[in-house]
Length: 196
Image (cartoon, rainbow, N blue to C red; front, side):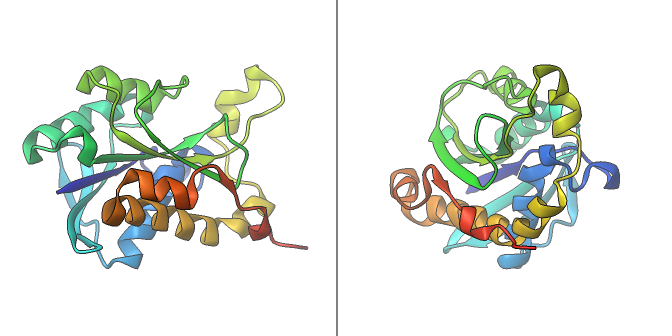
C-alpha cells in the first residue's frame, strides 16, 4: 500500500493558505480517484482507494503542521508502510509558484512539517512532491506569508496546478519516482497563469 500524506493545518481558517498546498493536492486526488476522505485515524483524516491499480491511503494529519510527524508515524507503523511507499506532498518556499519538484530523501529545508516527520520516523528517504509557493521579500515575513491565502492571480491558477501535482503523485505510484521525475521534475507551469 502507498501512503500519500498532504501537509497542512486543519480548519477552514487555513484551508486555502499557501502552507496547505499538500492538503489541497490530497483533496484533488480524493476527487479525481473517488477516494472519500471520511475516516479519522491516529489524528489524521484518511481515505482508502486505488490509484493506477495500486492500493492507496490518502491522509491529512490533523495535528497542525509542526506536529505532522506524530500522525505520520502512527499511520506508517499501523499500516506497515516502507519508506519508498510514503509520498509526502508539501509547499516549498525555495521554489517559485507554479513549480513542481519531485524528490527522494534529502533535508527538510526548514519546513516544520518535514522536520516533524523526519524526527518521528528517524529517516529522510521518503518520497516528496514539492509545490513552489515562492518566498517573501524579507525573512521576517515568512510566517505570515505561508499562513496567508494564495493571491487572487495564484488562486486562478490553482485548479490546473493541483491537477498536475495529482498527476505527479499518480505517476510515482504507477511508474516509480524516476519515471515520474522525468515527466514533472522542476517544470515551471507559467502557462497556467490566468490573464486578467
